Image (cartoon, rainbow, N blue to C red):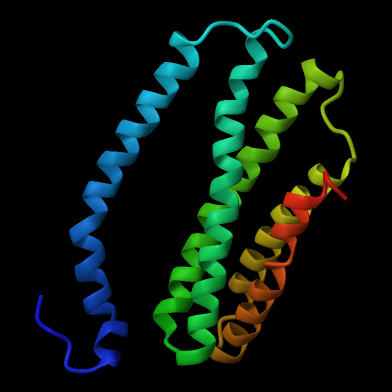
Length: 180
């Protein structure tokens, strides 16, 4: 890669695609290895829990998908902030694509939480603070994706970025909801 003469060269899609093409294969291979290793440990190596039985194994998928939900949303907030500052459409593109992935992780979090909750609590859903706020984060993802499909102008991109930044408030609420 050539040295960028000024900082705006780093924002060009060609430069970003060169960098991502260079590292994406390694990230995919590393992710597949880590996922395979952790699933092997979770399902074949560890013993049954004495209170929850075999149902506790769902937690290995649930917790990691929840952390990914939060991480991806923070990443989207960072991209949205950079978009507001630079007005570079590449960051809006990155925000939109990460929102799709984050919505999927959020859905997996809710579904696996319900699967674990049924034998543990006796019901699929309990309207406690953490579950409700996690569901609200899922709705934030879905509403963002719906609005991004409806509105495509640059003015709406600014509004979507502001919406994404405001939605960041939910993550500390989800984390602290049990203590509150």
